[in-house]
Amino acid sequence: MMRKRILLKIVPLALLFSFPLTAMAGQDKKSTAFDNVKGDLSVMVLGSGGPVATPAGRASASYLVDGVPRILMDAGGGAYKSLAMAGVDIKDLDIVLLSHLHLDHTGDLPSIIKSMYFNNSTYNLKQKPSAFPPGRTAPFRVFGPGANRVPFPLDIGANEGVAQYPATSAYVYKHFDLNTGVERYLNVFSRAINGGTFNYEAHNISPNWQVYNPTNITPSGVDGLVIKAVGVNHGPVPALAFRIEYKGLTIVYSGDTSSKKTNMKGNPLLNGGNMMGISEGADLLIYDTSLATDTLPNPSLKVFYNLHTTPSRIGEVAHKANVKTLLLSHITPLTEGKIPQVETLIRAQGFTGKILEANDLQVINFEQYDH
Image 1 (cartoon, rainbow, N blue to C red):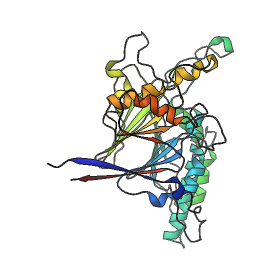
Image 2: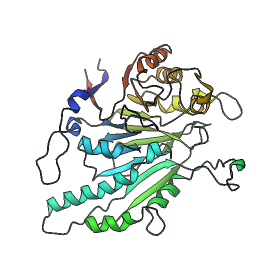
Image 3: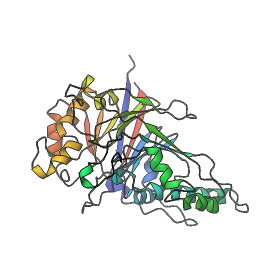
């Protein structure tokens, strides 16, 4: 009887950091972390940290899914540097998935987009050195949460009805729109660099976390690719989790989410909540690991505990969803150095799959075969 198995291969960090940085244009190319990306689908950790800068030196949340097409999941501060160190050429970056609009998940997006046009210019000049390069014409496509219209409290001085967070489309347009964007120079800059046009699309996905109703956001043009998004609870923040399926492999990314298992009325969420549903059968589940304990260690951390996931909740989701490998990421000062403690609480929920601690520039490859 033939059984399908998925092999997951992790490139050791010691090997990755032994490689020199990417050579500058015109110099000989040196080996980099990107050279270790293999197979139909892989994940490179660009940022394994959270919102706090620490001596551990982790970049904030960001992950590059390499395959066809290339997908960027979040772009927190430091992701740009990780891309450079990894030797990744992002001229063909096609899809950006934003879990939510906190800076530790979006801060390096403009820098990455700018680099994308430089990468296209370098490529085009190599193809036709004597001609002005035609540049990139395909748009980059951004998918993220729509607005939930939760207002600021009036007692802090906010105008009535002002929402705490915009929709993703408003966020993107207010950055890059030719006439009104704060980064509007990129429209002209990109044309001057490579003679192309600055094309982009922004799509809003419902962040409703109280019902399990995943949205298929698969862009056209890639056979066999399926991308789904579902709302998750992150307090007042509109937030999404993502599921990527390609050639029999499944990657799920939680973004930032709480342990909440009841809806606004206090009733249990159906099927254990949206993270349970979106994670079903995942080969790799990348989970928000901001908390090292299940109980509140300090009253000052109450808000943080309301916004993020406890280790036992991670274990419950991974076990009941039959996840194969769990990647603990979004490491914060609360969890730095305490991953063994987190793993113990996860195992106590019955999860028997593989558990990995995410680190910047880590490469996770998959191979599929029958035996």
